[in-house]
Image 1 (cartoon, chains in turn orange, purple):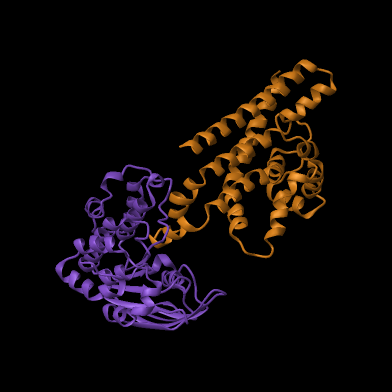
Image 2: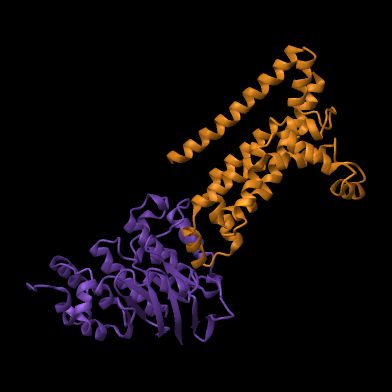
Length: 222
Length: 265
């Protein structure tokens, strides 16, 4: 059980950090995708959406290659950090950020498109600078999208399996997340332990999604 | 002290070439049929849109030239849009406070302006719960509280009933005078122009323009005005005359034949 608890804490830590990082970089990507008239925009939209359609193992495979000391990114990391990204928590975090990117960027992008320009133009004519517009207009008016993005990013990272398997392996306390320990238990025919994890993930994900959709519904009625 | 415009704006819908100089005081009207580019002209002055060629300067500061395009925030141009564009997630009071916070040393009082424009009773309400006419009045107060150097109004009274209209017009005019705030006022209603504006820019269907004293231009172009103006009926005429000062009434009466088909007084 204690190894499962370790896996639980690791999973939560990974999901939390991934969500925080994505909520920092996601809005900028989403804003550009929502507002840009560039002819390259569809390409970047496709790139962001790629993890939605690609088998996680494909992403994991290329990340594994990139992290390996045989290639440039891995070499650079090795020379800076002194250790390899592959089979480490840091590598897992990078993989999760890429893997969960569309789940955060897409709701935000939709929110920014719906927001439109009208209130922002009004804010310009009142003299609000960029930061004041973000704080007083953009974030409050797209609050729904931010909440949805946070929950989707978090919940999706909880369920990560394929990418972790490829780049993280199965090191307890470092890269063994819940979905992997579940797989381990099933392979070892430890169905009771498997049930604990599977049912736990199922119920907690359902509760999380139920809570967020309830909150969003309440906002609609206000 | 003036707003100098010299520009050319072209879309598939209209072709606007304009050279004119608005005095930086009082209220200047812009009048013309739909689709000649009145709103676009205001948006260009505010810096929300950029004309293809052109130069705009205000009180000898260059706002737009080949090399320069000063942002809306720096121009400090207020704008009352046709749709009020209040911030829907804020209360009326929060909308007003946010505008006032942009001023380093605010000189205007929210309470005073709210009373003048009859919005005091809704201050605590959510902005998106108000009717279109109420929202429009709040938008006017909000734009004044930001203390702009120039205020642009794009048919601001379209959603208001006749009685509120004349009251709002009186307070706008008074505010322009006491605060020495120049305003540019776009309207479809010759009556509003006649009551509010000192000078007038007339935009015509054929793309030509004319600029001059509001009363003189309105009188001169009787026929055009009858075509494009929302001709106010006798009841409205009656209500408006009640709201006017004696001096305004004389001015209005002199114009009356333009707008009233049969004067039954």
